[in-house]
Every structure is written in structure tokens, then in C-alpha cells.
Image (tube, rainbow, N blue to C red; front, side, top):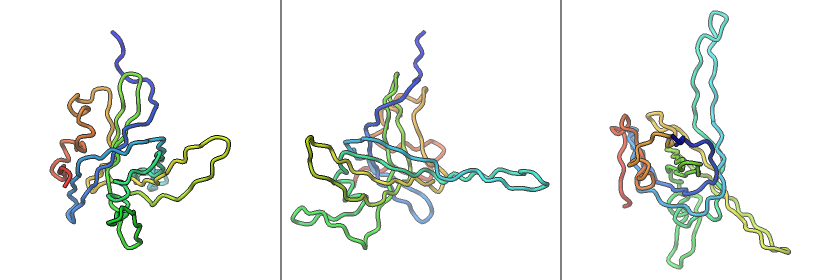
Length: 199
């Protein structure tokens, strides 16, 4: 019988974002994920390390300090929808994007996947923020070189502690197939979360 489990992963693709609303009581809801075409690379490092509590001359207790992840998402070009939805740039009546220092950036879930030798591995980071991208470019020389754009992403835990999720070897086929249709919420967390359509 052939092994159906992935042995390797490669090729980032299918990045999506889904705006999140967090109420004062900690409940949260997501809108329908929106595609972010042109994924180039993602590099997220774990943020926070276990800390030892010492007593009786030994490491008496290890404190879990999972503060999420932080790193970069590189895209061919940041979609205009992400600029208006998340970075809160305003599209004026002439179709010009205006950046305003007075606005507060939005939080979002980040979804993406890697190819595998058997099937794609799909991920979600539940509570992300993005810093404004820099402006970078250079003139053409002997050959044209594509200039990518990079978002610095910070993924932090939700009020119920959830940080991320990913599909595995035995993920339910319906859950796997609907990964980009609605943000996946584990059954144990559904009482603090709802999924909304785009409004």
C-alpha cells in the first residue's frame, strides 16, 4: 500500500487574508477570505521561548511563553484590496490610494499553503497585523528584474490562546476543501467565534 503522507513541502502559494473583528469580551469573527495572488516567500519565526521558574535549587516549573510568530511575507505586488482593507489606505474619487497617519490598521487571519509530494499543506495564522511596506525599486539595466514587495507580519494569540492551524495527513476532506471559503475554527472554539460573509 502506497504511503499517502507528505514527506516534503515546497512552493508557497494561495495566500489569502480574512479580516477579523474582536469584541470587548474577546469573541471574534472573520469575513470570507480574499485572495492575495503573487506569493513569493514567507518566513515567520517563533516569538517567545519557555522560561524556567526556579525553586528548591532546580528548574521547578517551565512557563510556556508562546507569543506567536513574526516575520516577512513577500509578494509580487501587494493587492489593492489588502491596502484598503488592512493597511487602511483610502481610494479617492479619482482612483488614487491615499495613506493617512491617523488611521488604525486592521487585524486579519493569514491563510496560505505549500505543495507537498502527496497533497498541499494548508495553514492559517489567526490574528495577524502587518506593518506598512517600504518603497523600493531600481532602474532597468541589461535585463529587467522584478521588484517584489514585503509585508512584515506579526501573528499573536487570540483571547482563547489560538495562534495557528494547519492541515495534516488525516484532515477531514470537507474541512480541507473549504479552507479558503471560510476561516476554520476548531469545534472547541466555536462558542467564541463566528464566521461572516463579506459585508
